[in-house]
Image (tube, rainbow, N blue to C red; front, side, top):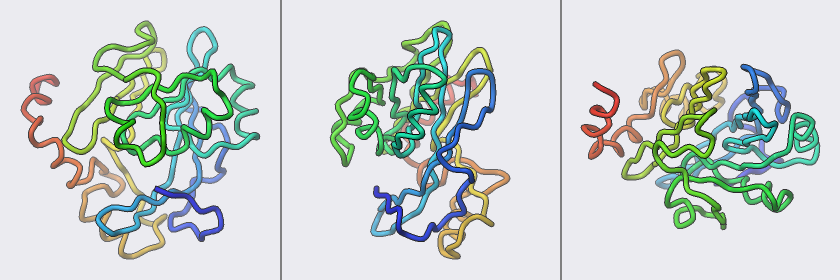
Length: 218
């Protein structure tokens, strides 16, 4: 993955970027800059989005942090101290080392195996384990394991907010500048208004699909 601030965006950003946007009690999102994922020889652009959770004691969880900036940090710290940096899957970690460098006391929580797979050094303090939330009175945690991707799903009880990353993708085609990427998104089944996990990602859960259906009662 990479980010180039001088490159013309391939996706229309969800402006304003790097600004806190309230969505529910003690829940905010921050839309960030574009990032490029290199996969099977293709450079695929993606927008970035962070979810901010404020715990009852005032501490903040940064879920899938966007690119670090002093201004964004100041805005966040007006809400409370930043205590936790969360990598909810093996793709959503890229800027965590930058936040950790500026906030050495913050703890890094990540899905199992991230340290080995990450393309940047990430020193994980605690693995996110299935049904073992570190905030059991406020957040439920479910870890979905696949052959390629493992994702931690958060449920914020107070606001009844389900927080996902790549298990559901919902690209608005009119925001994509590249006709080729629009085609890929449409074929993968990840296009608005009926977005879902892309077909290639769904296949990575094939071996565990029966176990997943049993857990969800389907």
